[in-house]
Image 1 (tube, helix red, strand yellow):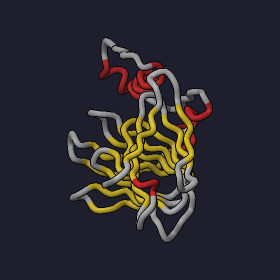
Image 2 (cartoon, rainbow, N blue to C red):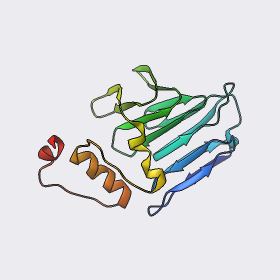
Image 3 (cartoon, rainbow, N blue to C red):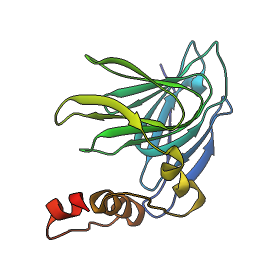
Image 4 (tube, rainbow, N blue to C red):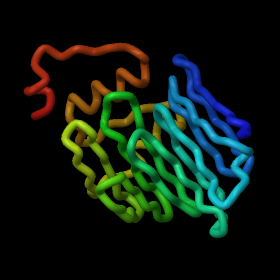
Length: 177
């Protein structure tokens, strides 16, 4: 018998939560975080649907593991953003510390600050790349900021921010901008 807890943000607002282990999580609009047994056990395991910013309390004896789609992120104490919206690639952006991302059949990638990892189930690709993590955490402060982003990335962010659907007549041109 496991006691499952679900934290959720509404479609209209973000939510800020403190987990039983002292870790903090900000959930972007229309996101959910699940965990069991008050995060007690050998590992602190949670599952994310949507987008969350994590400030994980350090506990080397009990690693913190976030599952999102087909990707898992393992940390001890760190700050990162993770997005896992249905039918979109899963992405993590590391702000501080170190994380290990893994996808079954792909092994594990270790990220350092200002690196990102993406798993795209559509083409089964799993890779890391350099990325300014702060660009992906500004939403926790109630604002949006875009620096050298494609129009398609901006549209995707606006859709999540305002919970609307935006169409562009020529997405090929939008991706090239």
